[in-house]
Length: 170
Ligand SMILES: CC(C)(COP(=O)(O)OP(=O)(O)OC[C@H]1O[C@@H](n2cnc3c(N)ncnc32)[C@H](O)[C@@H]1OP(=O)(O)O)[C@@H](O)C(=O)NCCC(=O)NCCS
Picture 1: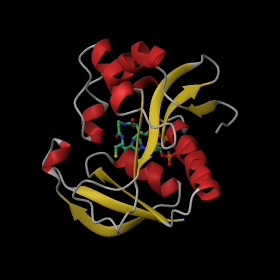
Picture 2: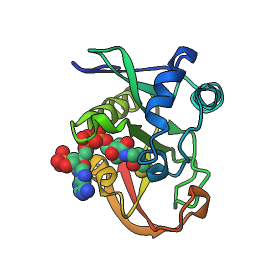
Picture 3: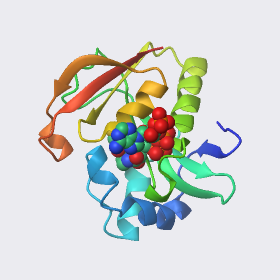
């Protein structure tokens, strides 16, 4: 999957240093419900254990530099407090802070949705964002997600802040 400026490709073990560079930023992970990475070794472990399914998890790579600057993916189903339909996948993403507000996440989500439409029978996708992280909601809305009107609290995401729920009918 690619556009003029980005590529979505499977994560490689050799991405660990770049992953650490961006995922150790305290402004990134906590907004998505995970703690900042503490070492390159931890980032390598995440690549091995979390980013290891090449069918639904990708590095967002800037073509100009070849560097992974973020992640995009969907889970086979939601293991969280979101009010998901049976088997409905949850999407997740982040982009390294130097690259925020350049339309990169929106572009990456758009090409993942196109890929899902072309290669799967998935009928809808669900996601949510902490209410104090409106940029993420904006990304979803630009890609056609619609707020369900629900908010949930999911302490397993590391915070008690309400999460605004959105869904995309494929
Ligand atoms: C959320 C995140 C992925 C967005 O990535 P990005 O590449 O900057 O997103 P885009 O540039 O495609 O779009 C961002 C949109 O949010 C808007 N935005 C940015 N800050 C905002 C704010 N404080 N309030 C409202 N909108 C905001 C931008 O203006 C832009 O919308 P526009 O195109 O209509 O102007 C990125 O900020 C990030 O990685 N954050 C930390 C991790 C995270 O939040 N992951 C998602 C968890 S649900």
